[in-house]
Image 1: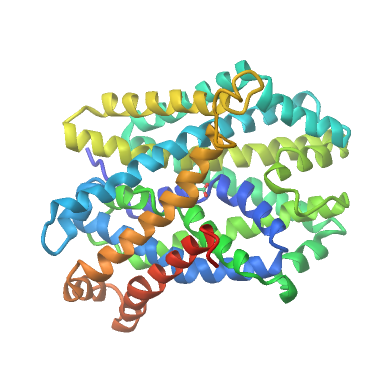
Image 2: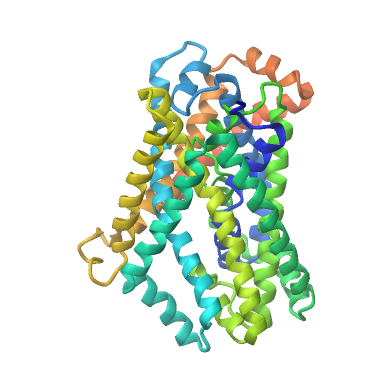
Length: 445
Ligand code: PFF
């Protein structure tokens, strides 16, 4: 039985990993907070120069080493140095991200049900629905969190080809159909033109360093780099695959989905005269309120929208589990069942502690130095671990792998010019961009 990805299967699964809550939930609200067009412009540049460069790098490491995300660095390094295994810390960061990614997908299931039974009718109602869910409804959240973990385990247990590739083959086209439908509908709204100009006509007075760094951070998050995911998936890709081409396909699909989600959401928001800078509550507070004002039709749109978000979330969640599963299988000779259950069990428990940290009853107990455990996990992984591992990967390929080997491997598929551009980006541009990101985080710039 073939266990690796087919050629199209890899692109689909990597796109399934990339296209997630980051595109439909995070991208629109970060765009809104950073003033629209300027941010979109910076984001596109960050994807092309930084995100795509690291994506190709991870794909190279995985495809050449054909092993898990920790061993892969050692195998690929010029000296076979054991210390490179520490780069595998990103596997752990990935499962920590998954612990809260899973209960956020649980919220989405809750909103699909709300879309059937009754959407909020006033802003207070919309805010209360969301606040009640995260602060009081612990049982509901644990129930949906359990369902999400069960779905992921079910797919993960079937393995790369039968589980991950198949799930993507079904869920990705469904996601595409729903998003295209919503996009067509948004073109009929008067606010469509306003949404387009908000997103694509930069207002340069809104330009600032923060937006540049937010754009770089979003590029990492959205392409699923820095978590060992792309390394893990690439280890199962066809041996003669063209990694530059497949990476470009994934980046294009991911970017198109983010832009579509942005246009759809801003058309909806502007049609109701709502705020574009509503932050993380945009999708869970502002949108349900708007859908609620559209009657039965709004319920149908709401169900479609939250299903799109659910499908995108599931295919990404499955990918966040796989690096750890592959690591445990290879390192400790575990069976897939045992490796999946151990990883999922850890994610399940950490997720519950994470969601309790936002609740009324346990919030104070699980708050440290002014941040809830959930905020800490989010901050330490998305803002710290992701860029650090991107940095490690860039330094690794730029300085610890023989350039001639890289050149030979790359130029069997792409021109020397393309290789030279990628090499310049990975050796200089990516590390400098990440250092700037950290200086900004430390408030030095
Ligand atoms: N790329 C996916 C998304 O944008 O939602 C999944 C993901 C991967 C999210 C890695 C976060 C992350 F750190």
